[in-house]
Length: 321
Image (cartoon, rainbow, N blue to C red; front, top):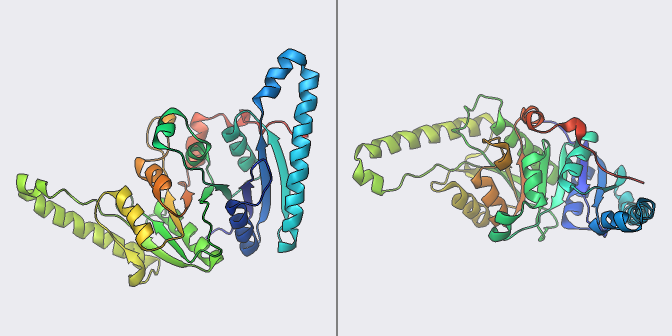
């Protein structure tokens, strides 16, 4: 397991303490990681003003906004300094916050980005792409989305794996998920559970095709064995292994709620066209519906995939004072 060296916390413009900041401070203190507090500012009216009153005046306004935000952020960091963390502050002015966050995370080699979750309605998600979704799709490092109802100390962490996605012996995404979950549980001194959903076959298919009953039984046995092998390989006690059957999204949401899970650790992968990228429907829906924090893990080769579609050399974190 790789220990966190650098944790980046996205802080709101007002530079107030939020659940995500509290979680970032907690994890930085437990891991000894450096903590970067980052505010991303932008006001489109400043760009409009440049055309009306001149670029120099607009630049002064932008400078003042960033300076004031930097002062607020540094006061916030000072209030946290007694907690033993190395804290750095950065205010970035950028019209594209997602690109700026990605550029900053790559620049400081963050292993974890922590952000307050911002839930959107289903209708809004069909019209816009909120920052949360963009970061879930683009960030190559781990991303933790912290809900508004932060518990003082999470007691249960769950790792959601797909045992059919790869054999237990493969050092792939499942391995990265369990490694991240074990590390998080260690830092939080929390219980770790393991869950993998078996996709239940509709009962009507058994009547329509009698042979499907045997196929279902064989698939169930194979899934069960793969889950047992993976659990045993990682020393997960039997009472902490969970294998619900049904539709993956519904079962994961139900599992989290029924078992009072505080943090769900899940993986995201590249799944087709870049414009639709990187999250299956399961993770996107679970992120919206679970009443718990979510830690997202990417495959080891994700950065290479990202480079095929995004010219990272052109990313800029934006204007700074």
